[in-house]
Image 1: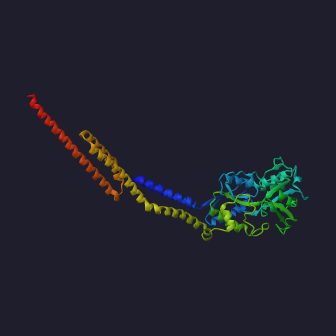
Image 2: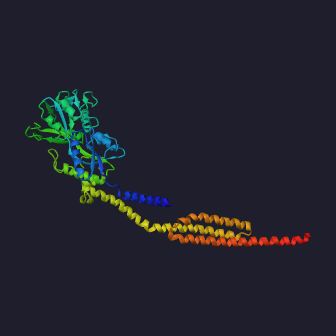
Length: 446
């Protein structure tokens, strides 16, 4: 009996906590997973900065290094990571019918660098036909944008001369004349870019028809790289160069906690807000250029700023505040339960005793209607069975209701006593009649 009561209490507590969870939502996590990119690349470099700053606020972050943007999107779709760096324009290449991926913000421009062998400038990508070209790793953002541009110039990405290499390997092969051209989508601060810009036997392609490209490919933005902007001492690049740049985005799973979204965007503001040689100050993080449906919390943050709680409390304290909020809602739900549960229990006891007294009244009527000892004995036996059936209820009722149990026993005993008195009278009358019959019969026989 006590085990059952404990079980009921446990179920009630679980239900109230569940209701509190549904009302307030889940509490923020202590750990998330971030997908970056190739080791040593800019996604990986920026990822390390995010990990460091998230750790300061008490949010542990595991890093998953990948092939790049498409790989990251697929991992988000499979639920393997919580947040990922994604190249703008690649989301449309990955089917997402259930809308599992959400955008957080555009965070910086990552130019497309096309380096080729030789000192004479290549003016169009179509001039690379028949040459050995690297377009980045499979499932990377570099592969996606390079394949689209090459296809537009009549070069199929399936051509045997089009190979897929990691950025460092592509750079090495280009310098060794084992490649004639290579595509890189990365920041100007990438060591691979700085290394190739300093080579006299390798030239950076300038997209002089940038307006046509940006019209045909809306996900691309024009970037003007002025002479000497990357390195004044070495005068890199050696002349003004026009580049095309996708936008680097932060994307996440649709179920990422809103408070985590806020913390990530706060850090993005501190990292990318000041701008760079390419990005103007205060442009990023931004909702502009995000081709992934925005997370609701990101929409609120980018338009209205961070929430009051996030602004006033550190993440670790905020997390516990939200956990306590779930418990507070549960307690609020328990207040009426504690207030009315005894009344409900009392009503249930009254209802069960009411049914017993109804049965007792029917039994009493049958006892009164019994006209012979055999019928009366059967009804008394039925009354005894009713008494035994009611015994568990008498044992279950709390101490405050034991008076009802004792009243029940007294009333059953009263009805039974009256019935047994009648039965004794019936049996006595029957015995007297039998004796009288025998005394009348004996003289006649003599």
